[in-house]
Length: 74
Image (cartoon, rainbow, N blue to C red; front, side, top):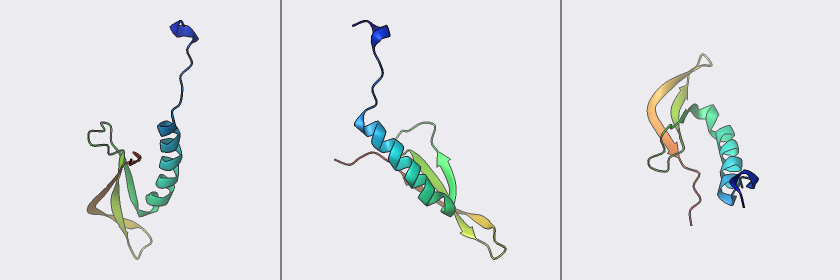
């Protein structure tokens, strides 16, 4: 088969990640600032710079960072 006739396939892992990441981001973003890693060295896809609410209704950034990976564990 010639290369121009090949259609890219979307694998099971890609489908999982797309669904998982969207939902995960919806859940975590109220708790901090979403960080995306340009280079994924340790299977860490994103992080969250945690925030703490202020009485004024705003928030302050803490020194805590959470990290997450959407890699399925087998």
